[in-house]
Length: 261
View: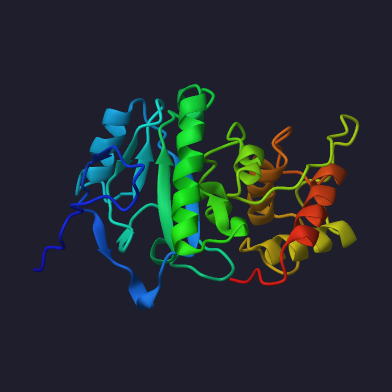
């Protein structure tokens, strides 16, 4: 059995430490990074996160971990395929691990209190994302949340992550969300009609793996939640209200013509 070489030198000048993970393999089908995925660790400390992400029995890894104080740790060389995305898709591409670079942001997550992302950490995530996207030519609309690519399984990095600020700094895509109307509860499971059909079309246009037809089912509910977590975080309820639909229209209208999968 051939053992792949572990990372020995950082890819980014922002890296403070190396913590090699053996959970790697070559990227498949000659794919190179065209997507940047942001996660949170969902674990109580960076020490625990680094341990899990480097244990062969855990079978997970990522390229970078950003601690709460802004320290950047690289675990996997960017040329290698890390195991961070799991079962996922974007614009029809199902091997997100081969097509992406993954950053894990140290945060215990929703199950453990979900604190705010500290200023030092946000600055480091932005700087690292700028560096990665600049070197690989990753388009802003392909800087995504784990919840975007795996909406039925994941909710990270969640509604507290500042996607607006990321976009203002040149990484990530953002449009001003339509304000939430407290009197508009929206429509939910089993609802159908022109608004649902339009939402399906627009979500697919952005890149979500959504069926072309049908009422609001469990799958669409998860995808609406993912969209809200990223682009309409004021109310995350998996329902299709006017605020969600108008924000979705605004987002797709703002996409560059070259945005493709």
